[in-house]
Length: 199
Length: 199
Image 1 (cartoon, one colour):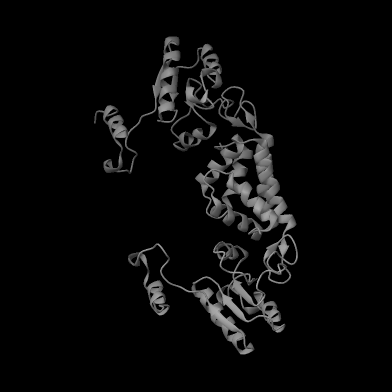
Image 2 (image 1 turned 45 degrees about the vertical axis):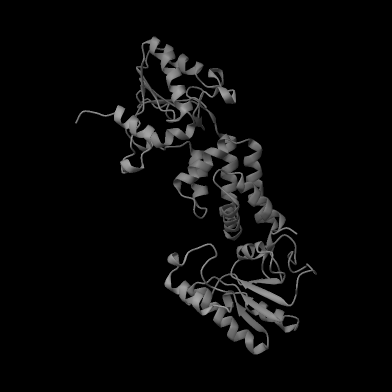
């Protein structure tokens, strides 16, 4: 005999497909939705469908957007001379949070991963090179993740772009601010040493 | 200028209303839903609406259910001589997980909390007393949470029900299995001492 009425069991199953949501969290969320106002549940369901229906890729930078071009690409106040290359649309969020970057973005849609069959043609690299042809871009900041795949992708892009006379930089790697040397792994620690600056 | 396109911002806002979901988790879930198949998003939205539309309270025990009576109340294989009293429908889950209880349930819909204006009339106490009138119930197991309010509710119910000649018991409190005495607070520890058994 099932533990839950079927509509609850199904809601729990659907919630469990979300990343980082296990059985217990899914149950907690499901029972919350059952207790909550009808308005709250309906707003959530509508927001999910609206996000799916009203969003597409920016034709310039591949960011997810409800307008084309996206809010960064169409903003004349942003510095069109730098492009920050990220793996996925959500990687833009932490960079925008710094309020320190005012350039444009380019979303690759992943990283090079030959074992998973992802080569340069599966990423939005061709359209990145197209954007450089106009000659307005002076710097490409590669902000792929500091993983093996992210690093390999950064090196690949740098070899491709440098010959075009565009400056290519990589985000700094090192000890996170507020952390302690004690907790740093060896690779991070050696990146921190390599990336040392004059005081 | 907003950080997100409006449909994403709205989805993030709606997700943040869920318990235990903060800004970062909401963003992670939202971007997951954007990347996921249309089928996954639509199934989730549909499950939320279906749960809200197809569920109601069991007219006997107040559990959430898609059929009335609920799957426990209508099951002749369950022992109709014991009723386990819980605060909320989701409290039934951990008890069913034990596979050791085969009786019925009664959902109070909360606990006595005079400061928040919740007295006996705001809880499903009257209908619990109605269920006892038939004379088939031999034991009431009070499984409200071991909080101040849960305890007060347990004491209140016990005073109300004992005079009816029905056995009233309270779930055991003590050190969680697999835990360590070191981590037990004083109140739990003294409950564990009180609840000691012969070996």
